[in-house]
Image 1 (tube, each protein chain N blue to C red):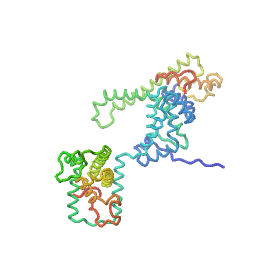
Image 2: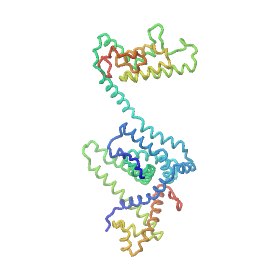
Image 3: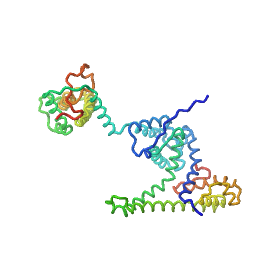
Image 4: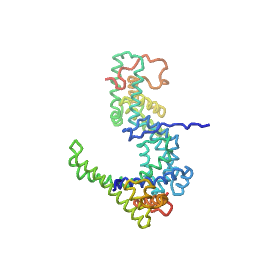
Length: 219
Length: 221
C-alpha cells in the first residue's frame, strides 16, 4: 500500500516576497524547520562547511551566512531535504565568498570616488550604470583567469580530453557525442574527464581560499 | 566561434564540482556529522544551542510587532464591549489628575527618588532607616519589585495598561509593602480609569458597573 508522504507548503523566501516575514510567517517557518530537524541538518551542513574551509571559525561564520540564505531563499521541503538544501547554501556561499567580498570592496571604493559627489541626483546616474557594467566586466575577467588556471592545470597534467571539453563548452557544444565526433576521441574519454575536472575545480576553489586539499579529500 | 562567456562556463564548472560534494555531505547522518565535528574540536552542544537560538529567534515576535499586536488586541477587545456610559465628571477629573501624574512616568519617579514624599509614613521600598537590617533575600525581592514597578510606570505612560497592571501585580507579589507607594496608587488609578482591570481575581467577578471613560489607550485629558 502506498502511503502518500505528507505535503508541506513550500517556503517562498524573503527575496521572492520582497519584504520581511511577519510574525506568523516566522512562526510557521520555524515550525517547518523543526519538523525537518533543522538542528540536526545544520550540524550536517556545518560538517560540510568545515570540510571545505578546514577552519572551525570559518565554518561557523559560513553557517551564519547560510542561515541568512535560508531565510532569503525559497525552499520546497517536498523536493529537497533540509540537510541538502543547507549543504547547497554552504557550497554557494563558500564559492562566492571571495567574489562577494572583493566585489563589495570595489563597489564601495567606486561609489565613494564616482557616485557620492553626485548623490543629490534623483535618477539613476550614468556613473551607477557604468558601475554595473564595470562589475560585470570584472567578473568576466576573473572567470577568464579561473578558466586559464584550469587550462594550465590540464595542460600540465596532459589532460587533452578536458582541454577539448573546455574549448567545446565555450562554443556552447555540450553534447559529449558531438564533442567526441568533432575531436575524434572516444566518448568515454569525456565521461572519464568529468571526474578529473571536478577535482581540479575543487582544488582551484580551495587554493583561492587558502585551503589545500590532499589527493582524494576534497569532501 | 565563442558564444558562452567565461563567467557562465566557470559557474557551470563550480556547480558541477559541487554536485557530488553536496550529495555526499548531505547523505551523512546527524550522528556521524556530530562525531566528525567533535573529532574536529567543535563543541557540538554549543552548535546545537546556536541552531536552537536561530529557531527561537524566528518563533519570537519582533518587539515592535508584539507591541503593535498588544495594542491591536486591546483595541479589538474594547470594540467588542458594550457601549460605555459616559463617565462622570468626577471620574474624568480624577483620571486626568492621576494619569497626568503617571504620564510623567519615569521623570516623576526620578524626581520622587531625589525629593522624599511629603506623607508622614511613605510606604516606599525599605531603606536603612525604616528597615535597619534587611535580609539579603528580601532586599533582592524589593529591588526586583522596583524594577518591575519602574517598567510598569513606563508601560502606563505608553498606554499599555494591561502590561502595566501585570507588572504591578508581579511587583506586589515580590514586595507587598510597595503597593502603597503613591506612584503605584496613582498608576492603579490610571489603570482603573483607562481600562477594565486586566485580572478578574483582583476585582469582583461581577460585570463592571462603572465602565472606563472613552478612548482606547490614550489617557483622558
